Structures are given as structure tokens and as C-alpha cells.
Image (cartoon, rainbow over all chains, first blue to last red; front, side, top):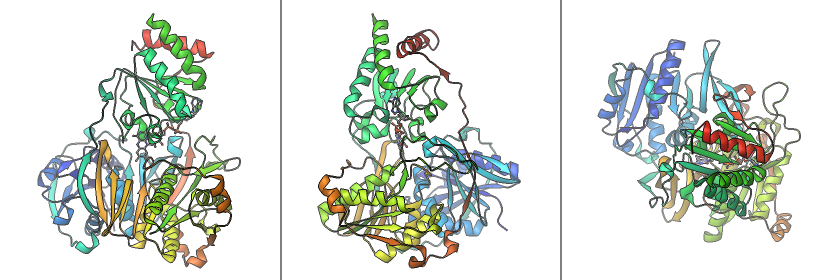
Length: 327
Length: 259
Ligand SMILES: Cc1cc2nc3c(=O)[nH]c(=O)nc-3n(C[C@H](O)[C@H](O)[C@H](O)COP(=O)(O)OP(=O)(O)OC[C@H]3O[C@@H](n4cnc5c(N)ncnc54)[C@H](O)[C@@H]3O)c2cc1C
């Protein structure tokens, strides 16, 4: 019988991704509610220090798998190795944080066992003694509760920020090395070094005031309205991804998981729906104002001040008011 | 180069979504639809690769009769032909079921490159392409921001978190999931729309593809759908545009003290 929860620990060259501790925290919570033991697994080469770090958490065992084919992440090698770990450890639940890396291999891993990943969850509840997971659909406009169907193991990931990794319980785990047989022929991806594009020309992380524009602006020429408001407030202008994808504003103005992370005194979001990939880049802002014509837009879930209405009426009025204030 | 691009039809981005009476999904009456955003970028990537290297672009969509409009749109933008996977057995599939159907159809067709968007704007499973790759026994890369062809196969640029990227080399055939913003989308021209009328759309069902019921069986169960709970107390400001502006500036100055 499969039993226990195994947590995937992500790392780059032995440096643990802090987001993995969020999955550790989730596993500790679900484990204590369902009476299951928690373990963790690290795949790589020379991961001893990382394993020691994870072993300071309250988990029973930290499994390490060291192999030259795991030196750099590839979906092929990780899937093969992780699958053998699952066959040896026989967990009931595999828990992960929904990072880019997990998105890349976890659906393959699950499919290789004829299973599915219950991905990108924002919470869980226990129903009839079993966890049921909550995830967003329609880019956060609605939520659904989903339960896995079929035999163990189940594969589940949580959206980044769902749990506080720094609140995962401390403890003392044993470290256990597992060995796997990797077939080099099956590793078809050859990754090059990770890199950053030329340094962003604008650093928005220190800007005290930001006016940010989303797809609600409709056309490139309307960006001018937002620029006027930003000027009147003495604020920097920023944007959601689709605005930069369309080249209406340069890439280095993009806020979110694939853009900049900011925490200004004021973040004024205009015509932005509030998809999670945007929110992670600005939710630390001190005061958040949202202008959106849709009262159900997810951006209002994190806004201090909300204005439900047409930005084309409200923004010019706000610009006029801000200019009055300046005088 | 033979490229198959998967296109999902999703409710328009600004649709008003109403939960159905059973509380299991949304009401689909009155909805209007469009091509899933990242899939549209996948189609554009396919068309640009064809323009550069020659070959053929096939637009594939799974769903009821209405998804033909997505295929026709792709044909109008320049795809050469279409494949429509239509069967009541394909209704309400999870990502594994959809991946299974796509794998069967694309295997039968044969290809050098299979493209999908990185996730759909409705369910957001972000798995279909990866599952299809696994079932086809092919390599894949996700969240792709650039595609180069070379003698050894492909060199693709993966987007990573915190502003990082990484080039990955792979043999072809392969499966890529495309990120929005990889290119600039084109629109269909009148000429394209006329030409599309003569292009073939092949229909395939589960029996023709030899898909058994077990591989389409659900691996997850939707218990309920609902409006998300709010964590923060939002102060809503109401009135005329002028009133709202005055009130907001006052609150930002005297309550939130941001100025
Ligand atoms: C891997 C990945 C990474 C991503 N990274 C990022 C990222 O870094 N940053 C980012 O922003 N996104 C990112 N995204 C995209 C993200 O999921 C959303 O698609 C995007 O944030 C939506 O942008 P938006 O809110 O401007 O557009 P939409 O979601 O289209 O929202 C437009 C809003 O404008 C409102 N509106 C329309 N007209 C008006 C009007 N007249 N007046 C007032 N309001 C109006 C609408 O009600 C709607 O809420 C990423 C996605 C993925 C999958």
C-alpha cells in the first residue's frame, strides 16, 4: 500500500529554491491532518549541502539521488529519476510548488504513470478524510474544487505563495541516498547556461509611485492617457504582460512573474484583471488602487481602494484632480 | 518542415461568466469564443517557421462543431489545412484525455514539430502539450520564447523565472509549448479568408483514431465551481467620475498617506 507524502525540492546548482519550502509546509499540514509521514527528495549531483538544509525541517527522510545526468535540469532525466524514486518509496501523494520547472516535467512524470497532475492549486480541504484541492480557472475569475480519481500516487502542485515556506516546522531528518538507473539515450534535451537579457534599462523596484496599465486600454494610442496620469502624479508607468507583448510599452516596464517585482507606496492598476502572474509582481505594494469595469475582476481581491467603472472616464478625471493637487 | 499547431477555442477574455445551476461549470449559452491567447502565438510561430524554412502548417482543434471557426481563422491566417477532432467521447475531457486524443491524431498524421500554447485561459491545466509529448515518446520544452532550426534539430529559448532564460537543444520531432509574446500576431487578410474556403478540414473521431475509453476516463473530478473568496477589505469609491477622482486623491493623501 502506498503511503506518505513526498515533496519535490527544486534547486539550481545545489541552491534550494525557497519556493520548495512552501510545498514542505503544505505537506506538513496535509500530513498531520491525514496521518501521513512526510519525506522530501532532491535530484542532482553533489546535493549534500542542500539535503542537509532540507533535513533541518520536520520531515522523516530526505532522499537524495545523485547522478551525472541530473547535474543540470532536463525534463527527461528528472522524469526518469523521479519515477524510480516513486517506485522505491511508494508515496500516496507527490507534492510540489508550481514553478516553471515543475510545469516542465511534472505533467510528463504523471503521464508516464498514466496519471495527471492536479496543478497550480491555491488551497486544499479535507473531505471524507481525503484532500480536495482548490484551483483557479478563467485566470482567477472563478475557483474550482478538484479531487484526484483513481489509485495512488497522486501528483499535486501549489501555486507559489499559497503557503509560507518560512513557517514550515523545523526538525531533524535522516538523509538517505537512493540510486537510479538513467538511460542516457532517453535524455534528449541539452540545456545551455541560464542567462539574463541585457540589463533592464528601467529599474522600477525603487519607484515610490507606479501607474500600471493593462489590456483594458484597448489600443496603443490610448497609452497616452495613462502617461498623462502618471506625469500628473509624478509616478512611473508600468504594464501587464499583454501590453509589452504587443510592444505598446517596452518589456522593461512589465510587472509580474516574468517581469519586475515592485513594492511601491502606491500601485494604481488601470484595466488590469489581476491574473496571478501579475499579482506576484506587485502584491507587496503598500497601497493598491484598481480601476476596472468588471466588479468581479480578481484585482479587487487585493485592492485597498476599488473603482468599478470605465477607465476612459475615470482616468482623465483623476489626471485633472492630480494636476489640481500639484498647484 | 511539417508543423502541427494545436488551437483551443476558449470563451472570449472579457466574457461575463455565469455558474450553471448544478454549480459544476459555467453556463455556455450566450458565450462568444476566440483562439486561446498563447495558442495564437503558437500558430504565428508555425507560420513564421514555414515562411523561413518551407513546409506545411496544419491547424488542429478538439471540440464540438463550433471549434471549426478557430480552424478556419487559422486557415485564413495562412495554415495549409485543418484537423478537427470531434466526438461526444471528447466532451469534458481532462488534460490527459485531450493529450491522448492529440497524441493519437498527430501520430497518425506525422510531423516534425508539434506546437501548443503554454496553457489555456479557461481551465489553465498547462499540461496538454507535455502529456502529448510523453504519450508520443518525444522530447518537449515548455514556455518557449524563440525557436531555431539547425542540422541537429531544434534550439529553443525557454523562459525561466526572475528574468532568466535558457537555450535548450533537442532533436526533432519534438513538442513545444509556446509563451505569449514570442512574436507579433498577424491578422487574416481578405485574400486569406477567401483562400481558406478551399482548404481541407479533416474530421476525426475516437473510433477512427483507435482511442479506447480507459485512456479518456477522467483522472480528476470537479466537485464544485464558485466565486473566489476575498481576503482583503476593498473600499469601493462611487459617484460621478469627478467625484471619484476627488475622493480617491483625498483618501490617498489623508488616509493612505502616499503623497
Ligand atoms: C508563465 C506565465 C507568465 C506570465 N507572466 C506575466 C507577467 O510577468 N506579468 C503579467 O502581467 N502577466 C503575465 N502573464 C499573463 C497573465 O496570465 C495574464 O494573461 C495577464 O496578466 C493579463 O493582463 P491584463 O490584466 O492586462 O489583461 P486582461 O486579463 O485581458 O484584463 C483586462 C482588464 O481590463 C478591464 N477593462 C476592459 N475595458 C475596460 C475599461 N474600459 N475600463 C476599465 N476596465 C476595463 C477588463 O474588465 C479586464 O479585467 C503570464 C502568464 C504565464 C502563463
